[in-house]
Image (cartoon, rainbow, N blue to C red):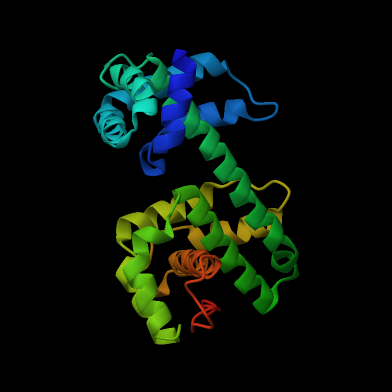
Length: 259
């Protein structure tokens, strides 16, 4: 098996990737360079991103490859053994380290594009003002936070189940926000929302940026970035459950709108 084929095969089987919260400016620069009309030497930026993250993340990536190898069938063992050699290599220029840096940048760019769609969707209402603008702004902020923080409904499954089981009431929504809204993640969410560019949605960008500026409130239930973010995750969880046939007319199919 060619080395590049082994690498692609293992990454596809394991889903190995750098956690979004740990990637730094080097990966952001690489993501920008990958875009249409992007500036910068992609190869050099990929090297910089790999050098910045591989020393810190190599251990967890190696552990992920080892877990994959332990579960692999005989037909996959050759590929895993090849990639495991790179996983143990401290040199950030090895093929696995470079591939993970590039994957992180590609995923970040895709997430940023999806986040920008939330701004565009909110632009007409944001430009019009009034109550509709407030709802659209909060909804956009929540969607942006979910995309840029790479949040997963499975990470909040018990809290989401409790919310749905309580019929999605306003009190249940407050409990959901408080149970999930650690201050650190809410600070991160506000930074991500405030820093997103949206040149073709100026009213929406200004509105969500205003919503996200400053420190988060002490009470997560009053956080107008986190509440719609956890609601967006809840809706994702409900849709996934419905598509898997796990929900039949269960309450909470339409989560409450944040106030």
